[in-house]
Image (cartoon, rainbow, N blue to C red; front, side):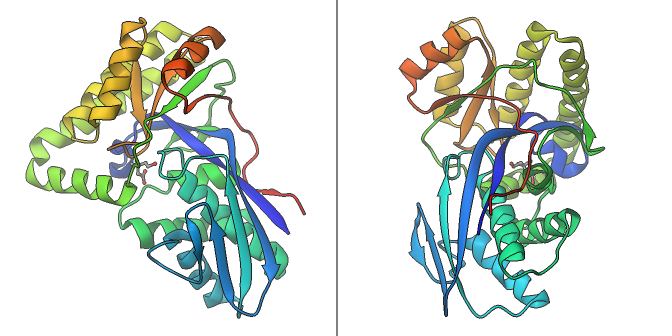
Length: 296
Ligand code: MEV
């Protein structure tokens, strides 16, 4: 049995979304695939390595199995994981592997979970591993599509050509979310208004997406990035890419938890080719409408 689930991209509002502010997020056409086979023990084979249940090397898969075992007794199985999404790239590879593992196990052992239950389990896994989380990544990976968060209202972003540039530097979501939480505890009077400003950027961004105003979206990317930098989640490699993007007349922002990971900008096929010549890990992605997929 093979299942897959998509990665995601935050267009606006990461981090602030953890504190109830608006965000815009979309599933993308890069997927993680999980093949499950019956086996006497647990074996997890992934681009990171081969282990048994191992909360250090494979925290998301291991927690997913622990939670599944609470509802269905499973003694062992082998997972073979491959991914089009670079690991820790800010593009939702953790949520995608979690959703695909739960989906594949559900199918293989006829557990009978529906999509909502798969999402709830994936959300629990994220909370256990990450501590603080908005639930956005597992939601988008389970259901696909583009959304205004927290309402989970669908938005049409088909007209946007989103270019993603991976810094090559890992983004550690748990570490970044904790860093922002500490900053908020220390300076609530400063950080809360920054979250409010990000909230307004997301709302304006939604209007700009609806009217197809690409200049405004670009401009709002720049403002969102400035605020993300002010809360300490940018990095030297992100800033260097953004400087290059701006040199070519565009704006960009980090996407996801930051501290590494990826930068997004809008652009044409030519912009994509130019950025790819500078940064080989550059992707031109499109909206993915399908979430968890059962390949059989
Ligand atoms: C991570 O992809 C997005 C964050 O906003 C965390 C979360 O929403 O749980 C940084």
